[in-house]
Amino acid sequence: MRLLIIEDEPGIAGFLKDGLEEEYFAVDVAYDGKSGLDHAMTNEYDLIIIDWMIPVLSGIEVCRQIRKSGSVVPIMFLTAKDTLEDVVFGLEAGANDYIKKPFAFEELLARIRVQLRSKNQGDDSLRAGNLNINPGTHQVFYDSLEITLTPKEFALLEYLVRNKDKVCTRSRIIEHVWDIHFDSDTSVIDVYITFLRRKLEHAGCGNLIQTIRGVGYIIRES
Amino acid sequence: MRLLIIEDEPGIAGFLKDGLEEEYFAVDVAYDGKSGLDHAMTNEYDLIIIDWMIPVLSGIEVCRQIRKSGSVVPIMFLTAKDTLEDVVFGLEAGANDYIKKPFAFEELLARIRVQLRSKNQGDDSLRAGNLNINPGTHQVFYDSLEITLTPKEFALLEYLVRNKDKVCTRSRIIEHVWDIHFDSDTSVIDVYITFLRRKLEHAGCGNLIQTIRGVGYIIRES
DNA sequence: GAGCTCTTTTAAGCCAATTTTAAGTCTCGG
DNA sequence: CCGAGACTTAAAATTGGCTTAAAAGAGCTC
Image (cartoon, rainbow over all chains, first blue to last red; front, side, top):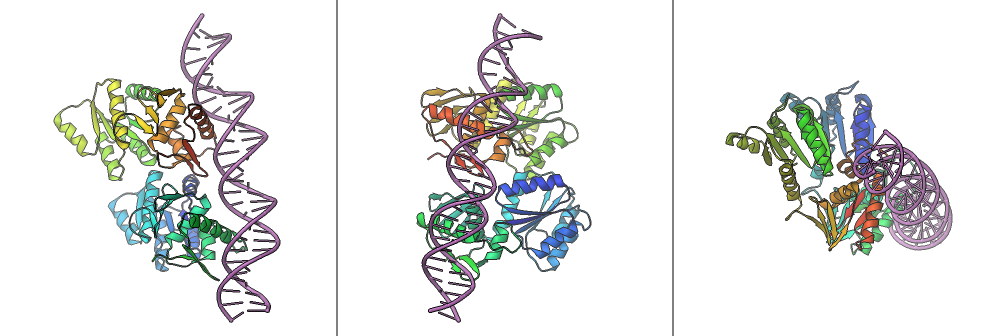
């Protein structure tokens, strides 16, 4: 899952980036509103975190511009302000959630998961058929059998399952899971798809990941 | 286990901090309501102790704010007041327990253990398979064989067992057991995991602590 | 407070798992 | 049947955990 953080204080930005990468997110950081908007418009993110008070272009203005472009990406505000007025303003500008500084990292993480899961549905774990993925504990179960995955394998499977019934193109996968933006002729994806298929097959959960030739992959639930 | 004490009298605060650290807790202290709330919001604690009468923001207000943020961390009040009215007030504000000053340190400790155990289950001792951990006496038994641990070894094992069947990430371990909050590239955890494994192995209880590479550790009960 | 022991932390080298690269083989669609 | 793209495999590169030894710190005794 790929996140954008728009935050001018390097300390906070670094802390968030490190913590979120530990949770297998691919994280980009922008240090002012203009460059943040730039990133948001030229890339596809699964969620954007914006500080209210940032230079060049205010957080709220960035949010408005993103919405104006038609994007429905979940947006969360970080802010020191906490009057009712601000909340209303933020939500009117198109934000999905709102977290007051100072905040616990755990709380932010929980709220991020809420936003991401709403795209999916139901409880906190991700499902596809009998496969159960728990992003909180980094565990995967097929029925009650646990499948042990490496970090990259997990991140790839998570991305495919979050987008189940949708085709995931190679370029999106390389962006969202590997955070690689330029064109490159690597075949990492193929290799990891093989790894995943082998482990899933071995657990009795074969044929989950289907190939769309020339495009990418899809996990179908039906 | 990591505690926060919000108490303005340095004498009492120091006494509590020292006493609780002697019991292997990782203890933070805040000297007024505002800074206390700050700490509570920006960190993850296993229990919070709040004095009723503190400057800037009253204890009860701090408690309300914490609950308002959705946190369910156990909260205990310290207070000189003891009318029924106050008790009701405190509990309504979201406190879990209530202890009147002056109090015996032993009693406070006992009540803290009650609050912490409710997260786990049943009786006072922690279990994982045939391993038995007694937080009160700092003893560890494998069947009837005692395993002698140093304070840090004990604290680490206790944290892992309290969170058994859940993955404990490195960053959570370093926060809850060592009380280190900033990013640091220490390898203390590795060293202590080695110490623990060696002692457990030696007692015949090998293979208890499993590594989740790139993430942390887990003790599985099953 | 000097000297001793035990605990905790730091640092370095080693080893194993993970990730990436690269090359050869296979398969689908035209 | 050809070629592009996908799959598989092996091996290189990298990362990160494990182990060890030694230094630093804490507590105790005399």
